[in-house]
Length: 229
Image 1: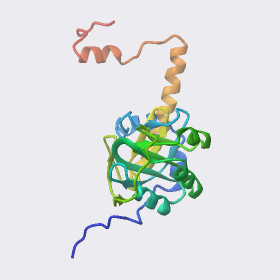
Image 2: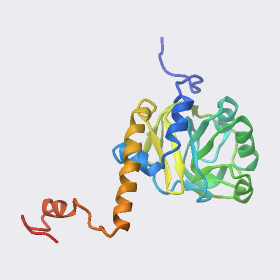
Image 3: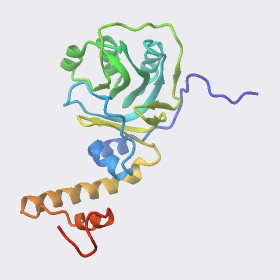
C-alpha cells in the first residue's frame, strides 16, 4: 500500500496563537539573527507597499506558473491567522491573485499572502491595506485549470517552508522560522532587542567604536597582533 501523501494535506500542526502573538512583536531581522541568520526569503520577494506587515502560520501552496486553482482551494481551507505561502515558481508573466481573492482572504481571517510570483490590482490592495509580499505585479490574469499541492513543503525565495511554520514580514522582507523552533527563540529575541537598544544608546553617547572590531580585524589578518586601529 502506498504511503504517499495526498496532494492536499488538510490537517497539520500550527504555531499556537499566543506564540504567534508574542513572535509578531519582533522584527523579521531580529528573528533571522537569533535563528542563526537564516530563514530570510530572497529580497526579490518584498512587500507590495513598504508599510505592510504580516505574522502568522504558513499554509503552503504549490502551483504551476500562471495558474491559481490551488490558491482558491487553499483560501477555502485556511484558518484565521494563516499566511498563504505560495510557490509560484517566480513567474511574473501573469498575476496569481488580485482584489477579489485578497478580499476573500481578509474575509476568512487570513493574516497575509507571500507569493513567489506576481499579483495585480495593487492600488486596490493598497487601499485595503491587506499585507501582500510578492516578486512584482502584472495585469495579466491567471488560468484555473491545473492541479498542484497544499500543505506540502515548498521552496520559496531559497527557503524551504513547511505547513505550520511561523512567517513574519515587514518592509525588510519575509522570514520563516520552523514551527518547533519559534517559541525557543523568543527569549533570545527579547535579549537581542535589549542589547541593541543599549548599543544604540551608547553610540548616541559618543562611543561609536565597536568593541569587537579590533579582534575581528586581527583574525582576518588586517591588523597585526597587538595592533589597534
